[in-house]
Figure 1 (cartoon, rainbow over the protein chains, first blue to last red):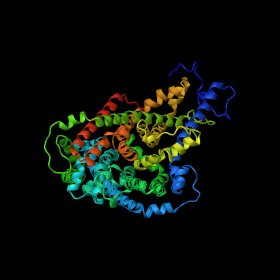
Figure 2: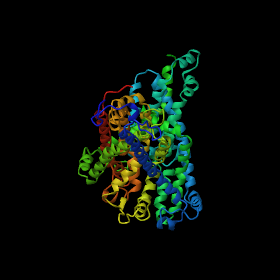
Figure 3: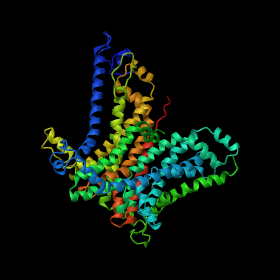
Figure 4: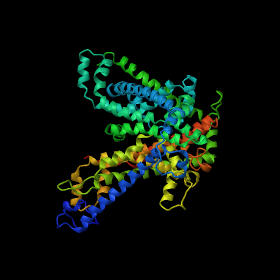
Amino acid sequence: MKTTETPAPVPAESGAPLGKADLPPAAPPKEKKEGTALNVFSHGVLVIWAIMVVMPLLWAVMTSFKDDRSIFSSPWSLPDTLRFDNWSRAWTEANMSDYFLNTVLVVGGSLIGTLVLGSMAAYVLARFDFPGNRFIYYLFIGGMSFPIMLALVPLFYVVNNMGLLNTIHGLILVYIAYSLPFTVFFLTAFFRTLPTSIAEAAFVDGASHSRTFFQIMLPMAKPGLVSVGIFNFLGQWNQYMLPTVLNTDPDKRVLTQGLVQLAVSQGYKGDWSGLFAGLVMAMLPVLAAYIVFQRQVVQGLTAGALK
Amino acid sequence: MQHGKYRFIVGFLALPLGLYALFVVWPFIQSIYYSFTDWTGLSPEFKMVGFDNYSRMLDDDIFWKSLQHSLLFALLLPVVTISLALFFAFMINVGGRKRKNGPVITGVRGSSFYKIVYFFPQVLSIAIVALLFAFAYNPDSGAINSVLRGIGLGDVQPLWLGDPDLALWAVMAVLVWSTVGFFVVLFSAGMASIPAEMYEAALLDGANRFTTFFRITLPLLWDTVQSGWVYMGILALGAESFAVVQIMTTGPGGPDYSTTVMVLYVYQKAFRDGQAAYATTIGVALLVVTLAFAAVVMRLGRRERLEY
């Protein structure tokens, strides 16, 4: 691979970025500069982006401890005292506690349902030959690229006619249904990679198909279930569009909806500090969980795109 | 393994498939059917009207605006986000200073720190991010204009979301902010699996970093870039753009419809204006745009798969 920019082939050693300390005296000065300059430049841009990511978040945390007047007069000043009453006001008066509870219920139910139903469907589709297998598989996969909003218009009335509108269990069922495409896609690929011999041995020993699945295959599929579980957990916890359409009862609101409503209503009341406390309250658990389970979260979220 | 096989298959598929058919497949089919009716959504009565909704849509200025904005989202957002992410990922993985006896190509110090921080926005709900930036963009008390004042640009105080010419860009910037980190981590993983000998060989042949990136890194990452592209485009046409536009811009839809997107217009027609049939018509247009986008990216991006 020749380029016009570098006139002569240079030794591999000096083509790399070089530290000042370990420079061989004969190294061409141009190369030395390129290495150091590149290093300074790359750190420069990386640090700038890191600041751009962190600053808005820090600003929100700071603001959540200030009083309303100083939020408006000097947005970047540090809070003079830490006003924890903003937080307690948001938790009780602004119903953040209810929103948290609703979200935990909805996400808990949906996550379990998604993993159970998703792995059942994926296992059958990955391991059994039957007429219509491919059709059902692509039916599931197709759901990933269709704009959900199109289905939401009739879905609102389907859910309404079933008496499931504005109910927690109704929302759970809808979350599961819309999480299935990716879950089935991911787990089908995963089940295909597992060895067949163990399941066959169990079957020969007289275990039924369902017993083989629950006692042999599911434990073997644990890494895949963890990845897809994290993916679905974050997706469902952060879900905004589905509850906005299907869950309009103020008492049943989930976290994201509740915060948006709070922003609208606090706009009239002028309780900005309480609102920021609510925002930070909603951000912290996910960020904390991410920092603790960093490796698994990254694996779970990028797993799909790497397939 | 024939014994009881079909009973097992049916038993395991019935529940997931039934739920999926009822809540996902059936509404999609229904909505295509409804787009040929005059259903309001408020009363159960409706009649067929043929292509009336479609011809109405072609005369609807707001529809054309929303289509324009959605196309801009789908084309520009992936380009900007993926280019930035490739650039950062390359810096993280190749921009390092050589250490004594170390490999020729090294990542920067603290690469894992950068990756952790960059990924933050990805775990937050887009709704929360949108709210946060709606406040940051506030012309008087927001963080952004306050920074501008602080660095001596007191005269430059844009209205951001209130300015019809700026609002759309301000909204798109938020989507870039929230997704770049995901792609940095994704591409970093891909770059880390490219064997170091390839870089060494290229450097030995006199290639500089610029050439190495375009001749080695990018071709070997192409599959990931392409699927990332489709993924980002679908998000930019659907749920993500709905959340940011609905939450951040006034109306919602911005001053003078300057930020409205197709997915928001569907929502407003169906659930605000009581024109469910017309909403599904715009939804069908959105479906066509989404599928066409995915097909074009897959087609243009088709290359020989490189094994290494």
